[in-house]
Structure formats: C-alpha cells, structure tokens
Image 1 (tube, helix red, strand yellow):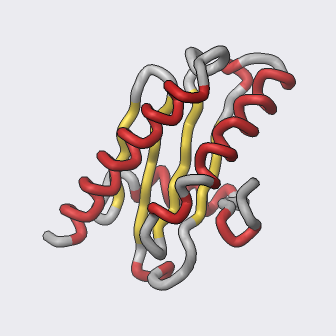
Image 2 (cartoon, one colour):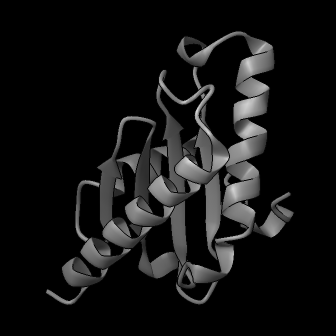
Length: 126
C-alpha cells in the first residue's frame, strides 16, 4: 500500500503530469501492458515522490480493475524509494494488462521507470 504522501489524488495533478510528460522535466514510455508518465517541477522540489494510477473500464469489469490497481500499487510501493524527490508518476494500464504475471509486469515497470527517469534527467540538464 502506498502511504498518503506518495499518492496523486486530484485530477489537476494528473493533468499536470500528462501535460508535463511531453515537455521539459517530463517523459513517458510505454509497453504492451502499461504507459508510464513522469513529471518533475520546481514547485515540488524536495517533496516526496507521488504515484497515480489510471485504469479505465476498457481494462475490464470492476473486479478486474480493482485487482489491477492493487497489483500496480504493490509494485510501486516496493519501488517508491528509487524515485527522486519532487517527481510525480502516473501509470496508465492498457487492456492487455489483466492476466499478466506479476513478475513480468514488475520487470516491465522497472525497465519503463529507468527509461523515463533517464530521459527526464537529461531534459532537465538542458
């Protein structure tokens, strides 16, 4: 479970991450199962990283969506210490995600997080 200080909650925060992922300080990368959006702003410098999840009805019924969110939250709670301060991350689940083994999903998430963090760091250095 992610502690409250590590959760994105408001729609405006999600919108900032989606918009910021295309600009300086942000990045996004995707796979067959998930898309990871990341944004870092000066206003959040020094604050703990936050994570948000987007799981639409296209993923499945309520049971499938809730299970998907639980798996993604558990994966991110074990990886939250790898994220730098002041970063917001949104993970968007794709329709192929349900039924994917957690180990494969974890490897995919690790690869995507590494990619977006590297890209975001290189954009901030410009």
